[in-house]
Length: 316
Image (tube, rainbow, N blue to C red; front, top):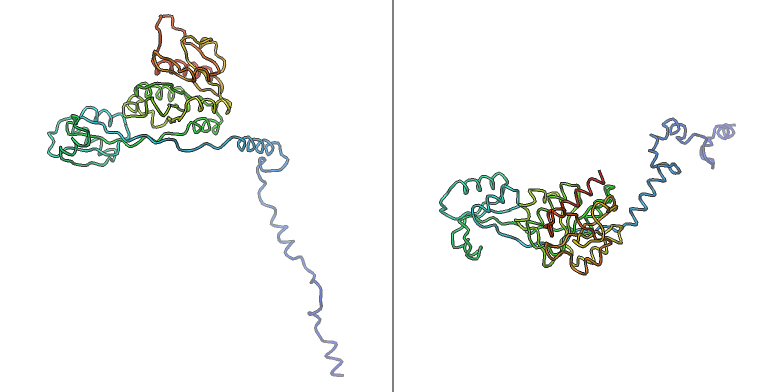
């Protein structure tokens, strides 16, 4: 009988097969599925289709090639030039001061500005400053300007497209005066442009003079350097930009130009010579600025400012 009792009381927990239970499904069901995703993330929603279309358009556009050519270091020499450069925010890194210098108001102001901006202050004997400046009359003050970090031309159009704007770019052809470059940079900044392109050779670069003329706007308006300006313009055309050249004998007057409210590159030549032959042939259209006063030509800074104003008016 004892054996039968043990058989009747034997536990059956080691039988094969799954045990009956919810497996946590009821608890997870009570927790819910979390917050509803935004419309742009819900498959099939119209906003999701729009977001996907924009992503495809961005993927088709080539990525910008960041970083352009480097400029060269520069020295600003003399008391007045150094003080003016520091006042205008020229990006100096070091101020060299001659040992035992005869101090005046300009020296004191230069030291104060350099200290406020956190520049390196280095004292040097006169012989060392003479060597650095190749014997120029430095008057005991020399400011060192680092090489300008030029953008790549594709950066300018890509930055405009990325924020949903039509590029407005100025390219300079044969402009050799840094003050003209600075004036163009200032106009581009004032009228909502996206940057300036200059050739790598036989053209003005971002020197201290250009920085001063830009009145500080060079700090927020990029300047790109093109190895070959004609090829750069052709690249812009492939990206959908219209290349507009300014020429005294242009086939169209500025007020009749309809493309300024779209993606455009305005090409300005040098005063007197105008556009070079290859650049002129590359332009989609050449326009002239009407001048009732009879002036033969305008310098690059003024000409660019006139066209940029017209572009801003049409876009505004």
